[in-house]
Length: 355
Image (cartoon, rainbow, N blue to C red; front, side):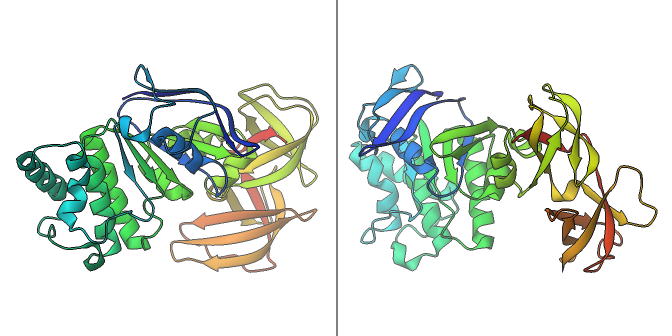
């Protein structure tokens, strides 16, 4: 099912929290709405579900505008953060709830619930109640309940946030496997960038009720269009630089950082003057300051964390700006606090964006 959102507007009291948002989600894809608390991602999801009224714009499921249809007429499956299971019902009855509401015959319910429980790995637990299940098992029940009705669209609101790290990995793998198998158009809301990168076909990064950028995980990570996206995805370094002349889109550019020229790439037009440099911690090279290559930037080690396979450093540049740097491979832990070092930047991976 293709979803097309056209100039959507949503208002809470006197405040417009979503204003003119447009987005297309292709059939069968897993699309993630990513952003911090309060950015509007859950509001948008709940509007798609029919739980939040739409003030203006269109919301198309296929060719049908459902913007003003009640939730029960949209044929959606919903998985909530807190599971929203009926505590007094068994696993079987929780999963069967949507089928019974649709007046499916009991024999078909038995078959479909059994198939759904098998798909999520809960065979043999159909007679238990939610209190007797682990958090991961409860989330699988919620997933089975959403899928058993064969929805056109599956909506998931921070479904993994209440699970510990190990369970999150297990359940997210289950979600991806089932979504790929069923090819249900899925919208997944999270504030966790690792979840978004690992699970998604496409990601929409939200900021203050608008989409800051939409793209594949690789595009969002490697080609952020704004400092906000770069900082939110992967905790990139975003530091102040200056340009002597304006840059056009998709060209090499030379910026000034710490009084030294630095080669980078401008994915979009950047006016002369103040700009932002974006560099991932893993894309910055470190070498001893003595004998440094031409073009290297001098810095001093201020913090050091040895993490086994890598060492993470915080470097301070002349002028006080800080950079996070991750070193991998042999000798990654060879620099100590207060050492003076030289930093090198790959021009193809160093982005210069408008300030």
